[in-house]
Length: 257
Image 1: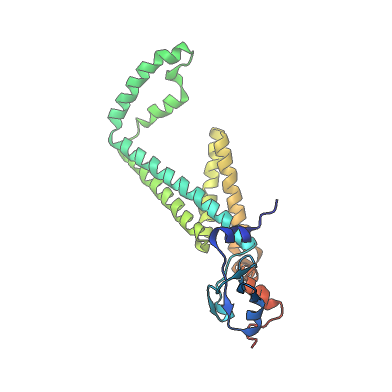
Image 2: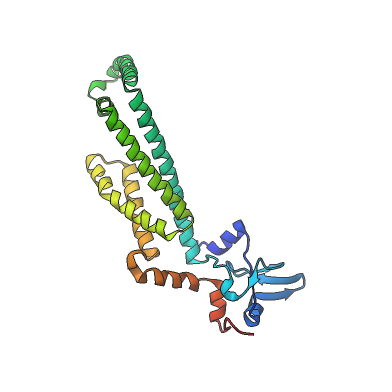
């Protein structure tokens, strides 16, 4: 089923109407009905009863995202939410590492105590905790220096900050955020591939595929790095999707009296 992004957004946010000063263009966007004047929505194209939300020269009309541009904005905001969730999670991990670094000895003693308690239980089910990869990994972290753990916490916070900055920028469809997302995500792809060679999991595979698709989609759809005509072609595509541009190209010059 094809999604009508324009009407879907108007149903959620409301219509956007504008009365241009140019008489010819104004007549195309206005209609008289038995219930009063109606103005054509710049997003979905439907006529809406009531006064317009704004007025002035046609080139001062708001550039309302519609059609493909609106769909791209929806996808960017989905990626923004994903980045924000990941950023918050990494912040929590960094705080956990920092807290662990300050109470490493007490946590080790508590872990060893619990290990002694659960060792006979797991042995009953023929599982040797002393040779468990998970237990081994945890015990290995107890050998890390305090300074090393602090460095890990700082690096995690920097990574989380990048994710959160990406999230804010993508939510508002900022072009610098699209570049940052592509560069930062692509930079971590080799590490994600390496992790898969060490241990394969559905979560790692899904994350890798999502990041690859995000890089390809943003770079191509937003015409970054000069792809598909670059920024100039992107701006022309966005403006051509504007209802005001559509109406003007239909034969009504912007300066018609």
